[in-house]
Image (cartoon, rainbow, N blue to C red):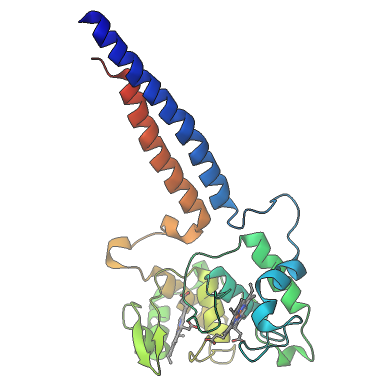
Length: 260
Ligand code: HEC
Ligand code: HEC
């Protein structure tokens, strides 16, 4: 009896140890991959020109001049490029795909490099270009004023709670619950798709700060009050990986420790 029990405990220990050997590296790899989604060497500064050639030129043309299947990006403006990349809407997998919010294919440094490269292709006067990435100071904004501005300018398309709406012609005004302050600011200033653009004349500094402040407080009912982890993208994945991994580790440890 005793021997039998010990043997069983031994094999349980062995299985547990094997489990740990497999799972620990898996979790580590997953976390590392999540931290750099393209899996590239993270120490070297990303090169915007190369990233563009690999990920964008097939549709937008080798010098961003546009093609039959995609618009030119010359003079699109840094706000638009940053917004399309940080919200994961670009790159598309195929030209007919509807741009939609998803996890970004690039990390922050890669996005910055792409934005800088595409911006460097700009021609003509500053007035001929789309807006640059706006700065916004949400703490300086007045949420009550922001709420009024939202009701006047945004609610008709995005819904009174910012939950999103179908606005016709196949367009969806998406939910505003996931946008970061910068993404809200960018969308307001450059106006993606059929959304109007709101320049400095329509929304001055204080209006702008107030509106963005109000919009980022709009959250799904179960997610109100605070900035959830979802806003930091890849890091969340890593975290989930770790938590999941530790769950299994814990199970493994329990297994090893099991008395028979
Ligand atoms: C498979 C084809 C495809 C690829 C690859 C692609 N795009 Fe696009 N892109 C499109 C299409 C099509 C549109 C127009 C979408 C629309 O308006 O519905 C677009 C629109 C855009 C816009 C908005 C332009 C404007 O002025 O409205 C930006 C910015 C953009 N793409 C950036 C990029 C960047 C940067 C990359 C590379 C990381 C990229 N795209 C890769 C097809 C592509
Ligand atoms: C005419 C309808 C319309 C109005 C008015 C409008 N929007 Fe939009 N908005 C859209 C559409 C359509 C999109 C999606 C565009 C796309 O995906 O290319 C959008 C996208 C956005 C996004 C991006 C959400 C994301 O996924 O990151 C934000 C933020 C936003 N709008 C904020 C606003 C704010 C704030 C106002 C008011 C100042 C406003 N919108 C007014 C139609 C509208």
